[in-house]
Length: 183
Image (cartoon, rainbow, N blue to C red; front, side, top):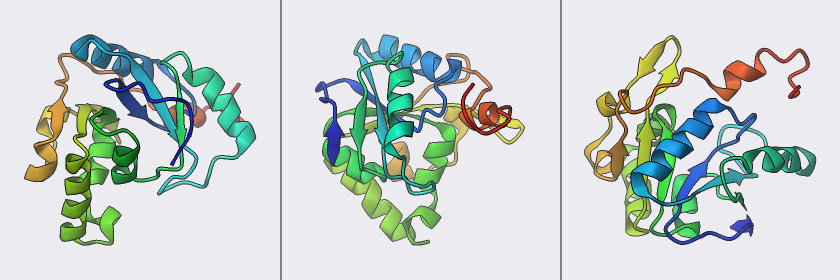
């Protein structure tokens, strides 16, 4: 499922749509890189569970910008258990919103057992998550207070608000674009 780029074993993988790359992404990559003393590789999946596929022109635009974070990877891995198969043993950088989606049985056919099976697949590949707090709605959700199931919590390294807080999102930035295209 790896389409483009070469995974550097041991690097942190930072999945995202990066539409656009913003200061929050850069700060998360910096904090995680310093914390683990390894490089960060952004990963863009052409396929996404919640969004339409990314076309080639849009992908090229995003890749040009995401290089500010590191050497990019491109996959068709829409789900984290698929990403884990592509990047065994890695730590994924994610926000609190993504951790909450991983925890939500709705993303596994509304079945807690299927959710737990997906988490177990990620764990079998030796992967972990570095979870950062995120502004969700009008409330900052500190990673250390997320209501996660035990098996997911067991593979998460939670970054406290005292180490990272930037209240920005790509969705918020896109809402300021007159034609929904980057300036």
